Image (cartoon, rainbow, N blue to C red; front, side):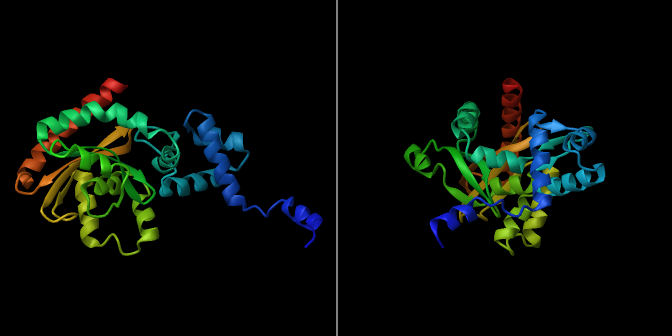
Length: 252
């Protein structure tokens, strides 16, 4: 192929897939409207028939790219698309905002405290406070781990739309019946327990941190199972939720 032929072929308009074009357009409309918009508004701006817009938004909601909130008729950008922006965004800001809360929880629990965020189909740790070994804690920051089995991961699987589907797309047998039961229990109780599932001899408890109603991070306390038996983990969960709620109110 000559240089001229190559330039010509590279300049050709690719064959576009209409459904993807429309999905991208609807997401841009919601973003330009400040992160949320009503179905009628989205259809009017896009020029796409209302039923088609509804079907596309339902698909995007199922995948976690948009969401509806209780009592709110608008479609909001969902956790999955916000997670994509977070990956290329400033994690330092989130870590700085949550650091005082992590320090309080570490002081009151005596355990190692983790700040985890979704990262694709895994969890990444933005901050770890280990009062017993600060150097090891710092070395583990930004490490990515599988979601299934860990307390942090169970929080994301329970509360982040589309997260289970994301995991199954890369690890087909990851969410067996036992894990699915744990996820449902987390949804009911509001916190997640790990009783030596992820690491032998280690127990953990995790709670969600929400921003504008969406779970954006998970905070966990881990330690030897001898010091963190199940009954104490439950008490720690309520303590952690109290401090997380207080921090959320202060940041509003």
